Amino acid sequence: MSQALQDLLDLLDLEQIEEDIFRGRSRSAVVPRVFGGQVAAQALVAAGRTVPEDRPAHSLHAYFLRPGDPGAPIVYTVDRIRDGRSFTTRRVVAVQHGKPIFHLSASFQVYEDGLDHQERMPDAPDPATLPTGEERLRGYGHLDPAVVEKFLEARAAVDLRYVDEPPYGKFGEPREPHSQVWFRTNGKLGGAVDEPLLHVVLATYVSDMTLLDSVLLAHGRGGWAVGDVVGASLDHAMWFHRPFRADEWLLYDQESPSAYGGRGLGQARIYTQDGRLAITVIQEGVVRVPREPGTS
Image (cartoon, rainbow, N blue to C red; front, side, top):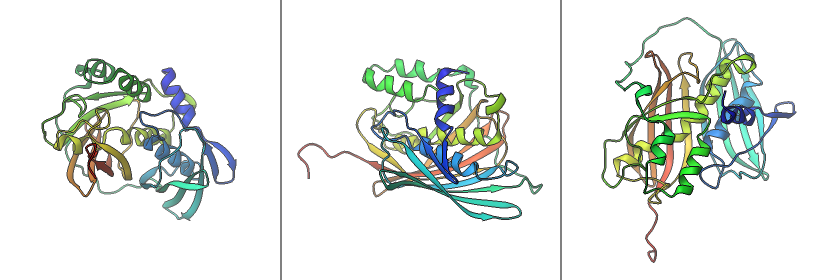
């Protein structure tokens, strides 16, 4: 296990300060606010710690309410909405400086046999044939070296490989609003940390990294890394269909059906390397084009 992955696991290991109340730390991010994937992952950890282990998470729905302060702890309060025979529902509110910054609803279910079908996994190259994130980033001479280092630090716990050029790597001309990324943790998980909830939490963490890329591709924008777009996550939903491991390759197949009114929508499916549909993700985010100096 890499040190970066161990640091991420430590970040996700919340401190329980009272019944159904937990406290989490933050880490530096590529932008001056708490990374949304961190808050979502920590909130799911808080919810999961109040649920029996035989009930894995099957969905989450979340709203990002305010930017988080990386320099302050985050308090997560869990509301036990329902404990049924098959389903358990939890609501989590994340608070900083006395104000809610994030709201999560999560549902957990006892495993049941049932109907089984899925959409076929799209074609994608073997991840082993693709350049690593570090190899791509260090090859972009147009990016500020400080930006590159921030990216590498923020994503050090994840081996994330783009199938094609990311928005900030090639921009200026619109492309198809479709992006594919392979990802897995930077190191194997096992022992005490090898539990189903942890794999779901880690996938939740990564899911907020690239989902709106396809919005940028449709307009030839490079994103915040090159300063031609200002963005932030608004809401996030995930459905966990089948078991998977976050330390094995997962294909994140992403597309954008719409952008309008200063918002962009991304939707995606995450597949295991052997073709099983593991997760569906939908997210809307703020996507604004900065005004030119001197304009009102």
